[in-house]
Image (tube, rainbow, N blue to C red; front, top):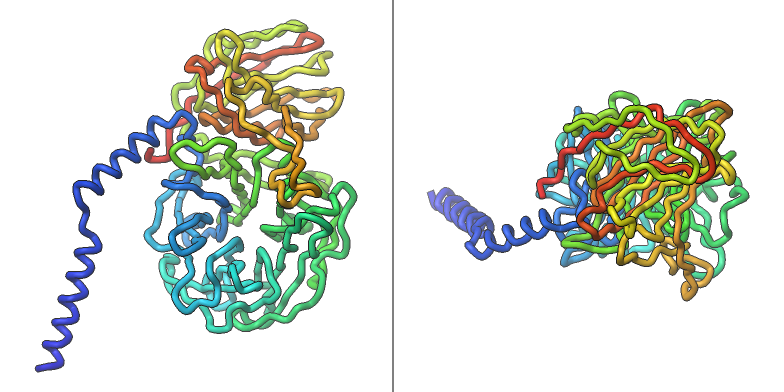
Amino acid sequence: MKMIQSLLCIMLILSTSFLKAQEITDEDIASARKIRRAELNDPIRPTWHLTIAEGNGMPFDPNGAIYKDGVYHLWYLYQAENGHHWQHLTSIDLLHWRWHANDIKHNQGDPEEGIFSGNAFLAKDGKVVMAYHGLGTDGNCVTYSLDKDLETWAKPITNPIAKPGWDPHMWVEGDRYFQISGGTPVSKGKPNPPILYTGLRYDLPLEKKGEFMTHDLPGVDDFEDISCPDFFKLGDKWVLLCISHSRGARYYIGTWDGKQFNPETHHRMNWPGGTMFAPETLLDDKGRRIMWAWVLDRKSGVSSGTMSMPRVLTLSADKRSLNIEPPKEIEQLRYGAMEEQPFIVNAGESTRLKSIEGKTIEMEFVIDPLQAKQFGIKVFCSKDGKEQTPILIDLIHKKIKIDLKKSGLEIPEYNEFAMSFASPDPDHNPKIEAQEAPFELKKGEKAHVRVFLDKSTLEVFVNGRQCITQMVYPTLADATNIEVFSNDSPIRVAFAKAWKLFPTMQW
């Protein structure tokens, strides 16, 4: 009887504590309303890109992406009172997200002081395992799920399982587990190369096997590290998606023999002045390799931290580069269709569209360049032309260029190096006025351009072969106009259609 009374007493204490923890005051409600209103009125806060709920994500790396039982799971890195956490999100359509109360974090007694970047994978025993860098341990740790919904997690007492370690990527192949430990960035000199670890269990220390890559490739600077690695098979090739802290997102394509990765080609997904950082992918039930990346803010509104729109990666026909496309799901957000009839733009002219305008829209163009070598689309144009962001397709220099010189009345500083501390000279980071990505049209090919605007976020896909992302900050209320221009010869706009995009963020 006494035992029952004691248990009832404990239950009463716990329930009372729970109720107190759940108690919401009038001041709490007022604060929540204040945040909502501020976010809704924020002129630069994206509306349909995945954006941090509140606070500052710096860094805001996507992590732990995995598709399981019909649900897309994604975590992002953020800072809390006791260090770096991973916040849990879920979606069934890649665009509408639910925030979860749980997160991956440092707990009392853990060897690490915070949770830094890593990945998720399905282990042989059916558990989802997260590999992450344990801050303060000089090594990489793991945690594994205890439930199907990935709400509860446990950590082995053997953490860290790989040491020394940096941004890890871990996977299972046959009966063995493999882990890439990224090369730690340094401000001067050459960073350490990524290291390969392997073992028969994910919860026991792994054996260091040596350097993960056979060699690096031309075009990669000596000061570039390999961090935030994501390694996966695509067709009959293997892709190493990663960043260098100095230059941002990039990837290698090559072969893997179970011992080392042999890179054959290297390409960038971010260029000087750009914003793509810390890419993360998953494989879904449709066989799609889907990627997100942190879009570096140049200005902060109410909060700071935005993901790129999800994009689908496939192997090009020659197997030497990636095709990059928006996901089909984006069409769910379309409403209020706008369309222009085919028209000609003369040399040296810029034609303002009559029906298409807006700051949160999707646009699709098919442009026949005819004999033109430099042409494109201007977005976020004010009526007086003081604000405009031209997207130039330059067939002479084989580039796509986003010109930033007039993108806003108050232009933030865009620099050559994404993270100056990892550049050859941290005190010297040249300003950039345009981001330029390599691109060329094949003979007789038309330019098929898809442009996505979301207040401050601009993403451009061209012929499924190139994608360039930029943060811009127009300030004028009428900077909603769209123009098509040609610098040197007439062009024909064969197709021009647009849609408003309905918000997916609650506020």
